[in-house]
Image (cartoon, rainbow, N blue to C red):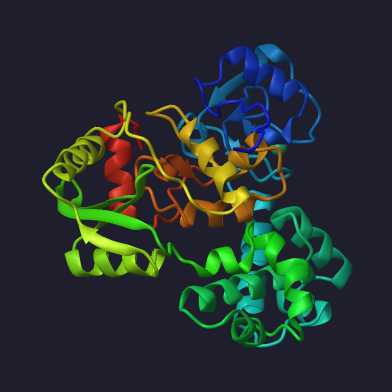
Length: 361
Ligand SMILES: [Zn+2]
């Protein structure tokens, strides 16, 4: 197990007025999206990080978001635009589009081409890309090629074949940057669960069907869906080399525990988990397990919690790769504006899980 940085559980409790006053006094943009404040004397409301002149403390009031501030009769500040998506949100959208371009291209697009497509200067684009993803565009393209190689390895192609298929010129390049990003050596990944016996069973749960799978070490997959065959295919794709066998009568008790967890996602769950994934994914998933039930955290907060504040997009991808629904509560991660964002098993299930934990939306 890796040494982990100290993790501060995000959103442990709602902010107190004193904390909000301190954030406004410090113009702390880190609180943008958490609340807005309004100034009685001007009738305007602002983000916590607004650079405007400080208002007198006795004129301030605090509101959960733009809708509440406007319902109380305030209008948005023209300077910090608290009613518009945060700058970070807009930049994340721009960079997400650039990531899609990189992923779709056979050969990595040039920095100039990416910047042009994003409507930014190459210098500005490079800087924002790094801030959002934690890596440079070139490193992202390399990581994507590594991921493509991993996909074809999982499909059973030879290591060398996969390396060339992913666009690497020579195997040495792959080992130089691919293995590190995979978090394991290609030959280990190639096993895809080889030699592993995985028991699984599917049953009805509060959110449709649930497939539960376990190795000898613990539960390795909890997958939600509506179709038993599709769930089984998903399991087989995740562990292509494993020996998948239907769980026996004893395994029914494990499934029953998971069904209970799905019905009451805030409850205790004591069964051991067998968590795969890369070193980075494991850090993200451990941080997710520290989000208290009944609360939510943003991707940015998780990134900060694992000591990688710039790796917001990589955190979002690790959340999407989670194979242990509910037990690793990726459903507690929301966008910084409080919107739900996607969920591997459907936004309706995410909403239902949060509602069962008592999160009001
Ligand atoms: Zn303002």
